Length: 221
Image (cartoon, rainbow, N blue to C red; front, side, top):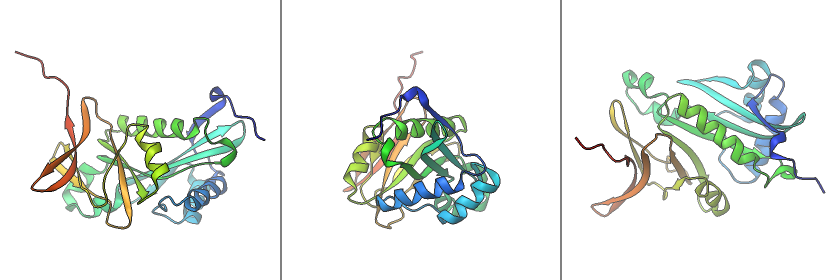
């Protein structure tokens, strides 16, 4: 039986050159747990990490691969990407402005001996902090429909689970924008990264949507 590591021993950093195989191995573990597959095949992701480290060049920006280490062991991995599918549906002149509006969690996996000791949470919090500092409005994770344990895990960390096909509306400097799960058998887990906003479900004309809206009290004049 493997001893649970002390949380102080967990180190979260960008993947280093040479971490590709560890990331691919954990990625395959995530796929076996029925989580969404990353945009790039795992072998391509591994090659990119081995050559460039955890910052991976992608359309409309960079992917970022974080690793959680216990000593020299890569015990967990989280890979985020720009919202490529969503950006492809935007006009060309808007894409550059909207690239950082959303961050997608493409891959999150923790090696089985190290589960239930906070590694996944530490990876997620680091990714959210990085995206928030980069100006992102929302963090999104695609969860296979019916994967209730995964849904509960994200819900406990402040995410709202959208119904299949349910759109998410949020405000950018260019006005309101919307995204959805792509109608491919998944559901979105959504969390706002902006202070003073919350994700809430709204109903209009018999249909529902999730809206990231301002909640902070405005000062009186």
